[in-house]
Image (cartoon, rainbow over all chains, first blue to last red; front, side):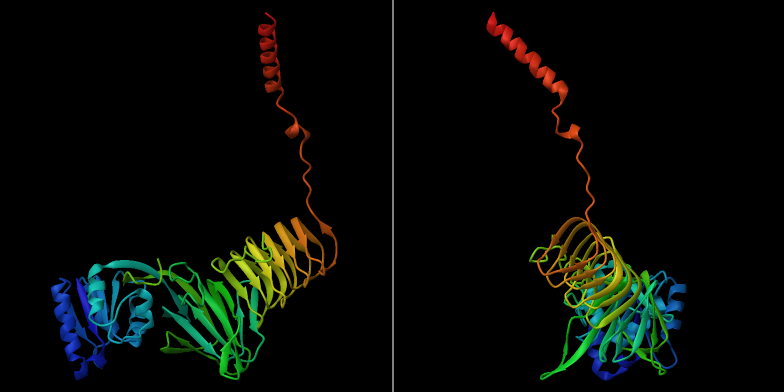
Length: 248
Length: 147
């Protein structure tokens, strides 16, 4: 049984055509299910837990990157399969999973290629893509050693999966996360990246070297603060993926 | 191993890179191939290949499977397989490796040891059984020829 959750912003008139097209397509594909719309009175956690109680096995979320970041924290570890239908074209999570935007995503949902992927866990909050720290003086503690950037301006990114140009063998099914530390050097044509550091891990602790707390932005949506314990949650999410996904 | 092309540390298998803007302190253990361009203090252990770049400064006892060293090391280096030391390398410490290549210009202050397994003499001796058979055959052939 399918449960389709529409994010609250989709109540805007500009999405009504797209939503009716999606509803028609899922009916044609034989994957029609119950529809629930998020609002001020109905929150996502309530809808999903009620759905699971009434026999829902697949939760399909229609929305944007923020919607997906939210739903991952609810369904992680639950006995449901997650499907995503992005309404925007540049959704990084959807791209990694090989899910095309809008109407085309319905075909991917119908094909039901299910993969168990790892998630990152930062202070009890799950993230699927990356967590980022900009321009901060931090100490990264591993089991047995610690790492400190020695230059003033650094981008520190924790990846569950990264573009192959950044980490050649990055995949969200390997049971590890990677810290990438990239120094930013200002040149004539603005800032440029130089050789970075790539350190795989299963658990680390990040703390600020200065008195002020440092912000960590997860999946470009949620801001966490240092000190932060970051670990990998292996195979935590069962998700429907497309053939164009970035991993095996 | 690495040669001029540094072929062993292929970018496909690289799992860990310590860049020039990073300082690592403690007991570092890596499972995959490891490239160091920054600073490492403590101990360094990897079951795979290690490359210490020309800008790297390592103050640690180093253990690896194969290694290519172009930077500075203060500490003992133990390599299971092949160790290649380039002209820019400075090593203060004892070196132990099965196969060793040192480019002219490299600075080494310490003992260099290569485990030497003397081959058993028996390995090079022909199989006595075979020798006997051949002799018997030869004898038989000889008898036939005589008759």
